[in-house]
Amino acid sequence: MRNPNTIPKRQAEIIRLVERKVNNARVFDIHTHLYDPAFGQLLLWGIDDLLVYHYLVSEAFRFLDLPTERFWQLSKRDQADLVWKTLFIDHSPISEACRGVLTVLHALGLDVKQRDLPALRQWFANWKPEAYADRCLEVAKLRAICMTNSPFDPLERPVWEKGFRRDDRFKAALRIDPLLMDWPNAARQLVKWGYRISVELNARTVAEVRRFLTEWCERINALYLMVSLPPDFSYPGRNTQAGLIEKAVLPFCREAGLPFAVMLGVKRGVNPALKLAGDGVGLSNLGALEALCSRHPENKFMATALSRENQHTLCVITRKFRNLHLFGCWWFTNVPALIEEITLMRTELLGLSFTPQHSDSRVLDQIIYKWEHSRQVIGQVLARKYAGLVATGWEPSETEIDRDVAHLFGGALEDFCGKK
Ligand code: FIX
Ligand code: ZN
Image (tube, rainbow, N blue to C red; front, side, top):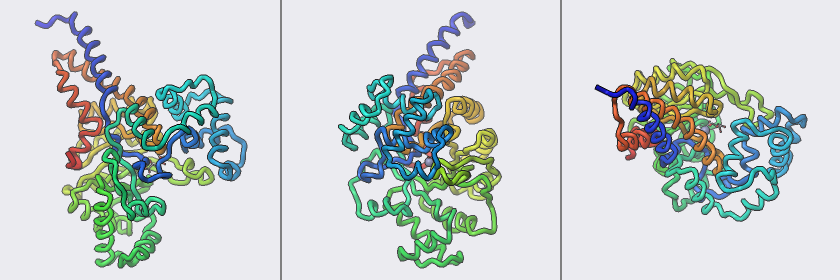
């Protein structure tokens, strides 16, 4: 017979153990907008980039009565001054994105209560990007980072073409939004690069798009292909987008064994004057994802959704299709209140077969706060689940917990991609 009095103590122990394991896990951050330091200026880091992050810009505009064009005319440093004054000095910085800046500074050993922006700038000025990247990865406890790589980006493309010595910790993912979201312009661009493409999706064009995908995935050693899609994305369909997916993207992915990642629900340019800060969210028709997964069982898909209201349906779809890997609390869902709710629901419906988080960092230093904040919430959710097991008399071993945590924080995705 079990002794009921021993369970709460054992539960408390397991809670502490799981939280510690999650806090110390060496994470693979599976989607970011960061770059290998070899990309030079493309890798953003430091206090000014932290302050002009688009999450903060949209929050600052809630208070500013400056015309948006005037803000964009300012130098980065002046924009950062304005965001600092508006969000940290004139008001207390309690939003998730503001707290994030402070978490970063605090973790790096800086004294945030001084509110001394020039002193902070001075501290950052002493770093070189390579050494700073090492420091940030170490403090954030990341073992690897996946970049977002676009051959359509005029600043990024030449770096790949010229070639560079890669830092193993920075994995690549091929971003194909222009191809699927702006085909006429993408087609024109592909023609300029020497592909024999017409706007009409004939057999030659399809073959040439596949050649483009093959060449770029090989060049960058892509882990997966990715696109962000609007809420009204539909599939199947008789349009060019569906044609490209069906005839070029999916056959290529199948052949190369690469997953196709879809990020669902972004409404680009809801307020275009805010530029990158002006994107919004909408409820996606997840029937499109269901159709992708069921019609293409030989393909691997990854998915995340931006709308809170899509999260439950997304879990249910994920239960139905083992060729689908669910990942991350993306962007507007990357706040503690929603990470808790979403992760709890995912563990209850999917067990351990998903990747709870990616950081989506655009500025290197952000990996520190995004992971610190997420680890805290995910650790608590998981700890509750293991405590629930203990309450049944099940004894999770430390080795089993290590295995599960490694799986959740990058291992599962590596397995899914076949890269382990
Ligand atoms: O499409 C994406 O990958 C999004 O994450 C970005 O477009 C977005 O601007 C972002 O940074 C969200 O965190
Ligand atoms: Zn992103």
